[in-house]
Every structure is written in C-alpha cells, then in structure tokens.
Length: 126
Image 1 (cartoon, rainbow, N blue to C red):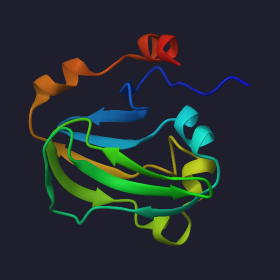
Image 2: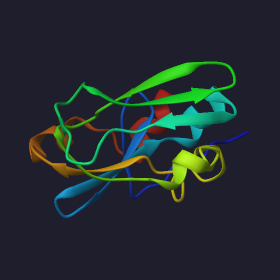
Image 3: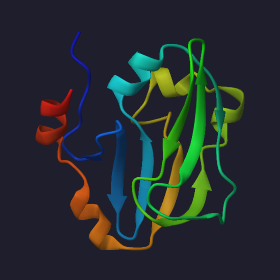
C-alpha cells in the first residue's frame, strides 16, 4: 500500500514532516511512520515555551507495540502543541498530516531547513 507523501512539506530521514509557514514550522510524523508504529495510544508533548536544539527529544509517541521518541528536526521554541492529542492520540494514525500534527515551533535557524528532504528525496528513502 502506498503511503501518502505531500509535495508541499519537508521531511527528515527519521520520518517527520515539517510544514514551513513564515517563521514557524508545524511538525508531525509521516504516514509511513504512523503505519509502522501501528495504533497510537498516547502522545507526550513538550511544554509551550520550551526551547529545543536540533536533535533534542521533541515528544514521545506510544503505540500498542512500542514507545518512540521523536526528535526535533530543527532548533526552535515550542509555540503551540496539538492539545487534542491528549484525548485522541489516534488522530496521528487517522490524519498524520492534518489533525494529527504534533507541535508548532518558532524557527531559530533557517539554515537548518536546508538539511531537510523534499518529497521526491523522501520517497526514495522509504
């Protein structure tokens, strides 16, 4: 089954996606990642205001088969979290690119965006 990969997003080797809007990045896990995790039952998100450096633990996603740490693909400050995931973490499975986003970061270093993959490069990785 083909996994959805959207052309308007940036990706990481670790299967996160980023939607860049001005100086913020909305971050989630890809359709491929959610399918590999299977049924997600819990998401532990960071506090709003937390400063992250690229590579820091961003959040933890727990599924019926594993617990996975999600790492910050870029440096920035958490300006918003998807509070709906507290009650309905399965939205990550059902709608990984829309309702199942994880956090929104204020971008600290735009140059880090150059390390991200475009849709075509990400397709080749999976």
